[in-house]
Length: 343
Ligand code: DAH
Image: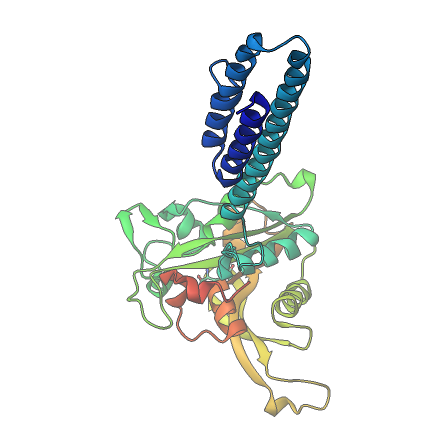
């Protein structure tokens, strides 16, 4: 067999191998085996020394051509295998961006906190400061300075958790009135503050009682404050929280720290100019009054010069009314299914 025939046969054989190869590794083996130093083409070229001077360049050129063909075939196959491998990898790592994702659950402020913040915004808008006081409080501030001396029968209205005979869990936010009045510099102007916070009573928890709940205290002290100012302020609060259609009504009441004292009702249901007074439903929402002279005196303020109004409201009760919640305990069980309704 001539060298050309051997080379032609070799080419056909190697092309068939290349064709059948499905892996880069075996393709590389073919390249090394065929085109390498110990491969058959080198072998053939080595046999050229036996050829005549005329034959040599012809066979040499033919051998080079065969080698180039095989090299090109290997490169083409290599590119094809690499492309196939890349496609396979892409297919295996493909993401289906149309699949539904896992929703991120967003929290929300507690409903009581929302009401407190709404009130804070409103009162800050009316020029009030936000004051804070301790929840573990002195008897002096919680009771005495609020005109409730030790033997005062009105102490019975507030069952108290005592820590010592003089230290207790505050039963109301009213002590913040005394603390703020003591600190206030009237040379700088009127005292206008609200104080939201937690309060504690030795009560058995049920649908309408909780041993811990919230109050927002309000206090304004200046030289010419009237009950009209109180009424206007409370009407603004009621309409902010419940809606512009609601009206308020003041009823005489008793609190040791105010004189006169009132209980404040808010109208419920739809009320307009045609509603007969006897058809209006009233719901009690808070206590208020004109600050008692004794409270001013105890805080070092001259009641002959200064006076003002105070109120105390319960955000828990407001939330119950506003959202129709019939059990106060819902606010404290921290069941997300309940709390997430108030977004
Ligand atoms: N501290 C009272 C309570 O807990 C609520 C209250 C009533 C506060 C009248 C006041 C007020 O400031 O003027 O029952």
